[in-house]
Length: 443
Image (tube, rainbow, N blue to C red; front, side, top):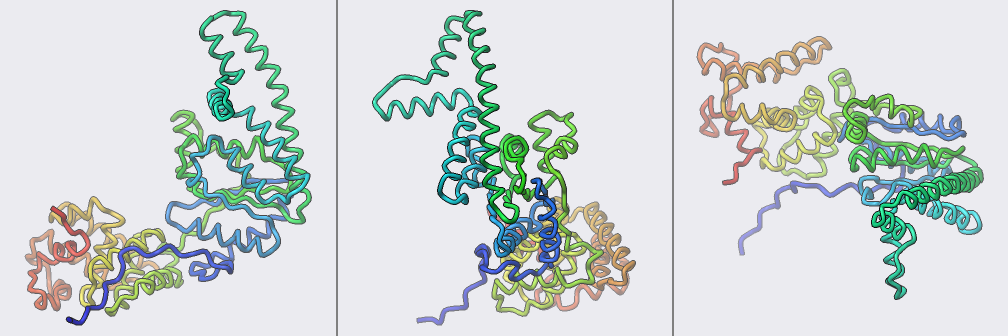
């Protein structure tokens, strides 16, 4: 039996489970932000909506879950809702209320809140939905009778009589008064529950910007209209630009989405970016790159790649999720030591500028000119803070060599091609050779 070779590293890592301790493995210094925000909660006893804003892939969920864990450890009642997972729910009111009732202690408070919530839910559900619920229940009991609302709506449609419509409107006006009282009763019971807590009750709502636009916008509106009571604080984890786009999608392109969203959110906080050039002196990016690489258990010497990937992630302002994808591509490339720094650059191009990457594979001179311009601008930025990496100069020369068809490019270009004889690769084939390791064509 032949000796089995060591298995290659996985291409997709399992999701990290939530730890039992808040901020365990805090590679980006998020605890400091969480502690500062925690200090504001006691000053929000009248109830509030806070928003933590960051682009996709910047660690909002990790921060939110760890902050929630910390608040639990401090004695807060905490609810964490993944809105994207549950945007199939008929109405956001149902989702939020069900989660609140789940944490209310059993007894009179729970029953009263449930009763008033059910009345509100009946009022806000569409007529068609109420009819279907009623029909399903009656069929289950052996009755084929339709709901009163459904029958009246059908009768009005059949007759088309003005007097029927008038009576229906009159009934709706009377119902509105009762519905308003029902809402007040629900908010009274909700406020009673919140008032029994020594510390504000905190509800985290994650992935709000990834929901169906109507659901995401409706959820924010429901919070304001139904859950605005003392000692209840909502934390929205979102990408503000995306949510504002959803608002325009619901209410029209001319809607002032920023002003509209501002009506529902008391304070916006920006999750600090940890991969920008201005922060290159700290070790956050290096620590995160190291953390992801170590989870892959690479057999080869990956330290050069780690160093260069940290520089590229900072230079191209990659998100944390982009960094994870970059290292997955490194695993895909079946990495080796010699060309790691070039792989880090090409992987970064593929993730951050995929169209330019494809044009570079096609060896378009205009693409090499664009890439060289990007690198030259980065060289200036890094030089300004005295953090220039020599490989940036090599990459600029590399693109220049393609622009000039490898003629009259000077002696420095020779540094790029040291060791190529091991791979039997010509100078003008190096880019395609490396790109093929992370962009395998399947035909």
